[in-house]
Amino acid sequence: MIVTEQKKFEEVLDSLEGHNKIFIVGCGSCATAWHTGGETEVKEMAARLEDQGKQITGWVVVDEPCDERKSKKELSRTYRQQVADSDALLVMSCGAGVQTVALSGVNKPVYPALNSLYLARVERLSKSDERCILCGDCVLAWTGGICPVTICPKGLLNGPCGGSQDGRCEVDATKECAWVAIYERLQALGQEEKLLVYRSPKNYSKMIHPRRVEKKAAVPA
Ligand code: SF4
Ligand code: SF4
Image 1 (cartoon, rainbow, N blue to C red):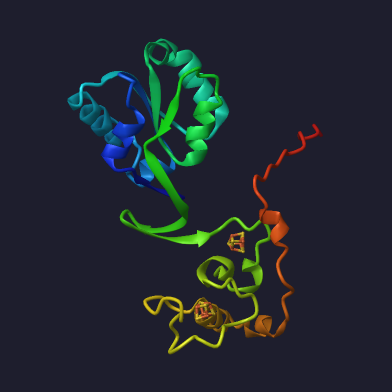
Image 2: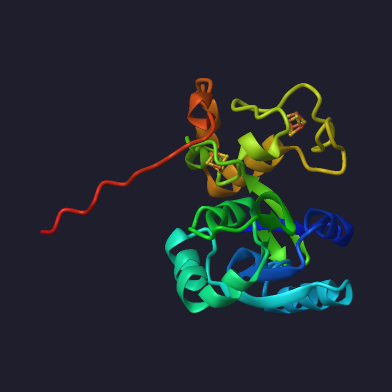
């Protein structure tokens, strides 16, 4: 899941300055699950903006606003008139959703209501932690399914640094050392021998932004 947080309402209001008629777009995927941009939060935002004298021309929670086809369908067809009546769109999704909405053919200014934080494991509705920085070259096969690139602040690939103390991380002692967690996991799986193999430095060129993938069309059988 992409974890987001709501911007301070004052910041949202600032960005909407000069725009009176607002159309709000929520996200039916991550932002709904994380309670930052689902139907409940969109309605709350609409009420708060109305309290500030804004007119809400309409709102929609798009299944996945980061999918241009879905955003286009809702904004250019189903809600075309409400979007046309607005001065600006406020999008309650991650940055990918905001940009997809902006590029989906709406000829209006588009503003974010959320900050995008990280790609997460969700333990419960209010607790998540970062688990993947999308390095493009996954190493989880030999680390027991625990990512040293993300969880070790130094991104070490061949065991712990010299600062690990009592199983804690020297960079943040409130956290377990990633490599202790990896060792314990591999030991539990009977796969400690994976630690004996030297791992070459990662190819970080795979993280040069912006990245783009175009999948080849499937060839019919
Ligand atoms: S190694 Fe870590 S950062 Fe890279 S893809 Fe795998 S989980 Fe994500
Ligand atoms: S103590 Fe462990 S998690 Fe922290 S920086 Fe060193 S190796 Fe990485």
